[in-house]
Image (cartoon, rainbow, N blue to C red; front, side):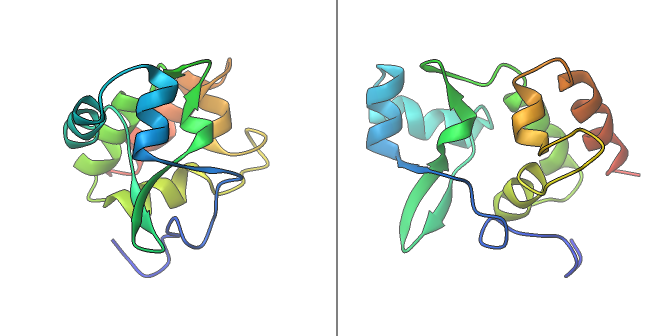
Length: 120
């Protein structure tokens, strides 16, 4: 992607979870968390050398419903995981909030549409 794409370090989430914390929260093994990340069902980046997941992506003891589809679309559009998280957490007054927050509500379809448009 271009230099103008924000990354996860540019747009920090409010709280970050380690992979063992995600496994505990979701009541699954750490191996399953790694598998979810590989398959794009969850997204993690390194922060201070440790792979972490924004807590906002793991709500109510489950991964946000539409996150896997968004991750796939963003990866297909050429975004790496840092850039994908940057996009998800960049404030957007037209949503309002961030795409990550909107994924958990009534605007999930709009977020998916916008992510799909990035590929063009």
